[in-house]
Amino acid sequence: MAETNNPPAGNNEATPNMTIYINNLNEKIKLDELKKSLHAVFSQFGKIVEILAFKTLKHKGQAWVVFEEVQSATNAMRQMQSFPFYDKPMRIQYAKTKSDVIAKADGTFVPREKRKRHEEKGTGKKNKKEQHDPNQMAMGLNPAYPGGYGAAPPLSQIPYPGVRSLVPEAPAPPNNILFIQNLPNETTPMMLQMLFQQYPGFKEVRMVEAKPGIAFIEYGDEAQSTVAMQALQSFKIQQNPMLITYAKK
Image (tube, rainbow, N blue to C red; front, side, top):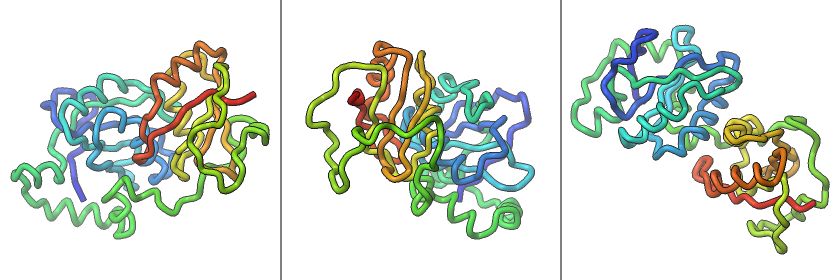
């Protein structure tokens, strides 16, 4: 598990590096959902090595996202600064120290046993296992919860059981509702909302509890939905590239 130091509030003089430090996060969000959502919004900037967040009181409302490249961290910090994440604007800066996983890769790693023992007491073995790989931590969780962000779409828009084709038989004409396919089963409406609300005209996300892997995103008009579709086409959530088309009406 990687470790980082918590930079003092307001200090933004850290040297550019592959790890960004985020604070002002919503403390009511569960740890596993927080990590999944962070991965969903930050993976657009480059490969993520790991995401760190802890249950301890000292680290609540904070997280570290470790990228493979410095440029990815820089772009993420610039473009996501003050992004409304679970209704709170994120505050982002470079981490003051390297993540251990990066230090081990470049040969500068120095063990910090005292801090390691402190973190083990605060998080426990089970949580340590969850922190190790953000791409695996979501496995086995329940799919999108019911009743979120509007009514379920008409049954005519739901694929028949057993049919897994990612391409509609007859493409629908442009309209204000987008049909999203190939989503990981653990995707939640809030994850999608954070991605799609970046574009003007966003109204709501609709998901069907019995049909994980698909969603409907509504915009004010077809011009607005088209902009979002073009921007997020093939965007990866947990390595699954989204397939976005217009919904059939």
